[in-house]
Image 1 (spheres, rainbow, N blue to C red):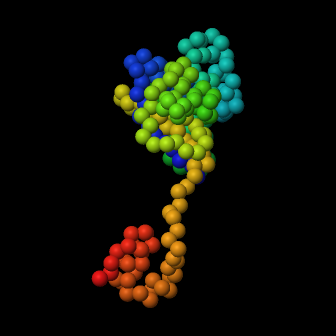
Image 2 (image 1 turned 45 degrees about the horizontal axis):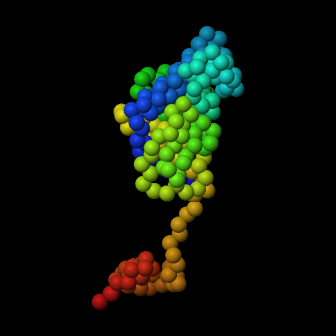
Image 3 (image 1 turned 90 degrees about the vertical axis):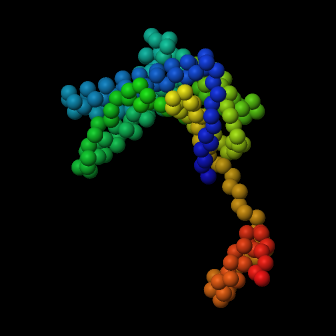
Length: 212
């Protein structure tokens, strides 16, 4: 079973600035990659794919320290996000549906950064209820429930001055209701009067109730 846990981040003023810079850097990468794809399509109908752009962050990181400070894996996740949007465009073109090429993300329109694996650029620390993000360092988390299962991805979302941490988990155990030792068949329910049917359902829920 998959489940997403959402918690409020409580960054200090310095961490808030770092988080803002992280989101802005990934927005710049998204828009730059979109520009390259847009130019290729408009000028020569060339379809630039994710595989054509996946290695570009390595080249950019070698000459720009402000880009190298962030996780390489999160940057590739941003390129995959763009790839998904562009693939959706071409599917609509092929189907003859309403076509709208992906738009550039203005300030405030790009609010999410994703790390595709716990421990690769981002690490959840349940004992101290903090998350460590490459380039940001540790940020306090208001965790109001236990995180169960295996963490698949880590996301940080920004809205105004509020920061949200999203932990997407696989293999989350389910909590089945305890057995009551009694099974009510469909025939039993049909044969009972309405008042008795209510009594049976309440008893099965584990809360005895007189039928009076």
